[in-house]
Image (cartoon, rainbow, N blue to C red; front, side, top):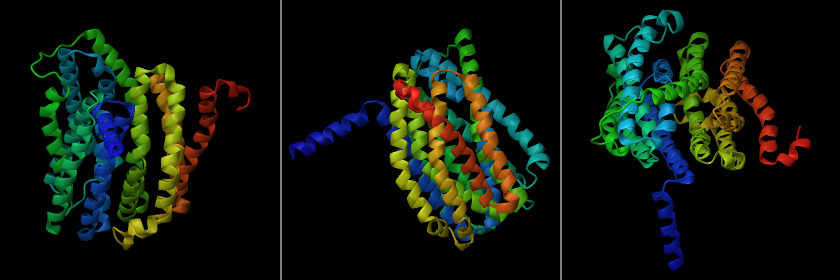
Length: 431
């Protein structure tokens, strides 16, 4: 009993003290909670709405996610890097100016996207949807931008347990809305149930930021030189983030244009399952980024440790998802089962993606931003071009084959580099 008590106390102590493992654990827990909530929410939606309607909503949501990433100009990533060393007034100043710039950019880019939709996304607004749908779309965009800023501040202060709380609140409100929304409300009703919980947490955590980031009662201060450094770092990070988010934005629109709304709905649910698998590598990447900023000399060792952890955890998960993909998609309805081969390909692709993500992070830690952006641009270009070329021959599965092929080729190229950095003596052995 004493052994159990000591083990319990040690575990509680680890969870209370900020550390690499604690932050990765809570980041993963928050994302898993969010993923499970999304699974239930979309199950409720697919029970009462057609695949075409689900496909249209999924494309709209993907668009808001992409535009929100562009709108913050990389400043959220800059906050995560710059806030920890700042005093209360400087924290307040950097957070305030980030919110002001990102919200203004969100308004401008949102309207530009909607006014130019006939050029790049002619089907993004359903014909039967009225102005209410457009208003909800814009609210979702601005709320997502604010939630991203809140998340960056919370991560920078190593208070990731609150991200888990955020996910729980979103799930409760979202699932409730998904259960109550009436079919008569159509696509506007679906988008409203998705938007409302994000709006709730965006506003709620905004008012909690002074307490979470320890600047309550402070006067905002902005030092021009520091803000220039933040902008410089953020701009380069924004380029990287834009490239990295392109597939999630382009694939739904590509599918909608070439294969129709029903295929877009199948892709959307497959992408949700795929995102669930990326929870672990994404959490480890964030934890590695924070840890590497504190101990850059330990980066080769930490990188190898993170890579091994990824593969050990992901391999059985990938096998399970690949084997049970027909049943997983069948949970949403028989019309989604034909996308099982796509889910199998996307699941396997998580393994090389985890390698590439960790390798790219080493450049972010070392601030080698030009190399980072060139590599990422080429990687994403190839991984989007191949699906585009393969869709006419393989249909929806062409996205999976192209994505898997592009990511695997790059992963095989960077693994020897990771090994050589971890064990310098292996330079003559591993070419």
